[in-house]
Length: 92
Length: 410
Ligand SMILES: Cc1cc2nc3c(=O)[nH]c(=O)nc-3n(C[C@H](O)[C@H](O)[C@H](O)COP(=O)(O)OP(=O)(O)OC[C@H]3O[C@@H](n4cnc5c(N)ncnc54)[C@H](O)[C@@H]3O)c2cc1C
Ligand SMILES: [Zn+2]
Image 1 (cartoon, each protein chain N blue to C red):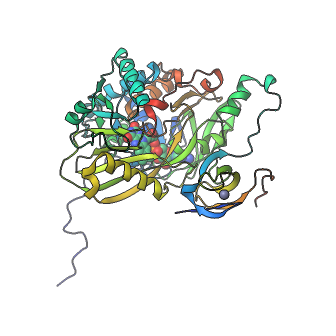
Image 2: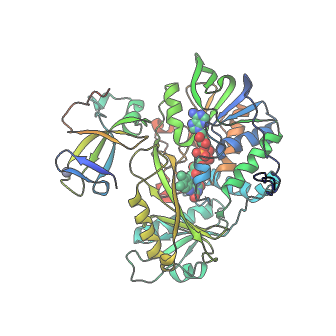
Image 3: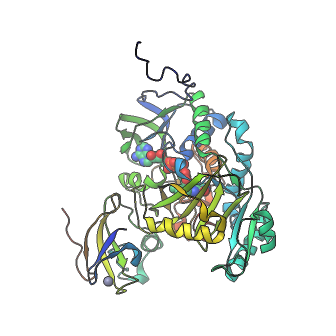
């Protein structure tokens, strides 16, 4: 089974984790002024990148904390994990 | 003694069902993706509309994507009117498809049971049965003892982890042989003069204002009057090239087969709560599918714990399967949408049509979507059956929420 590195607990088995989809999708700054189209993009539309993808994971069966990962969606390889309050790492 | 020519004692190669032409420089219609949907669209373009200057471009081999990997469940017992319309029309086409294609497709209307395991499941299922009846879709609610009559090997005892509280039953549902379906469509399209071009990946688009003038491929640039995207799990890769955002997420979806067994399983059983669906193929192998792997993935493989859970669920529901051996597992890449309904129709480009979002359940729609997409292309106007499934429903809010009828699988 694939091991995923929790930034707090270290490497644990994939079954301990819950997937949270694309990372860095900010809530609109001025919700009252957002158009239907912009809401649709916030609510329903996510990138669906083939290749390196920044996404959220939760260590549900461990420390229960959220973190971000850069993972390749074609190979499933985790390239790095980082904390939610950190910036999106610049990858080569 | 002279050495024997290898293969000399093999039977003659049967006739090819289609040839592999060189791509022409230009077509009236270019279909991207040679899975079931692309091939069915090609067939109905020729048959219903006389449009034959058409190419189907396939990056791998014909129908080697989800078409070759699905568990072939065909049914039309969805909740909403919009879904009933397209899935039921597809089912009616399945009923005449063998004759239309002049090719055996082993369509077997052995019925499908969708099990209910909780009180909420029961209520939702009964509601769906009533909705189906109103839409002319055959549907019944069965109590556990009736479930046992339809499928004696299902464990309907009260002492299992998720007891079977009943099931919806659609007698006209069933399975077909996916490869034969693809080959049947491919042969008819080829006979009509349509070019089926394998090993030809679309890598870009040439645009001219609001129109796409052609597609760039690994075998050169091909001009196109109209382009239809039928790329299933790879749709986003193409729409990204066009700068169109589409709300689908690609996930691995796994399935497996057992070794060949004597006939034990007379119907199709699906359970959303315990995440398994099972039928027994004509040859005798048990065919089982699971839910999607949770993460986005394009790798055509999934995690082993998904298989383990699916087997655990199967063995609890069908104790007799405990002695069966797993033969093979595999995965496809499915394009899931937010409301578990497809996304079909116009795009911001005047001459590009989208067909995606069928997720875990588009095999059953194959003839229906081929019919409706061909009509849409021929008339430059979405067919009534696909009109409700437009991309702009995510802005207007007119979703067609089929999570209940689709759930794990479709
Ligand atoms: C394990 C599994 C079980 C399933 N079970 C069922 C079921 O029981 N019932 C049901 O109704 N549905 C089921 N499905 C879903 C069903 O298989 C799909 O919804 C359906 O096959 C999608 O349409 P298609 O046949 O055209 O897709 P595909 O066969 O995937 O065709 C898409 C084609 O596009 C090609 N392509 C992609 N990008 C490009 C490009 N850039 N250039 C050229 N070609 C390209 C691909 O190579 C592929 O051949 C299942 C799917 C899976 C994976
Ligand atoms: Zn942790």
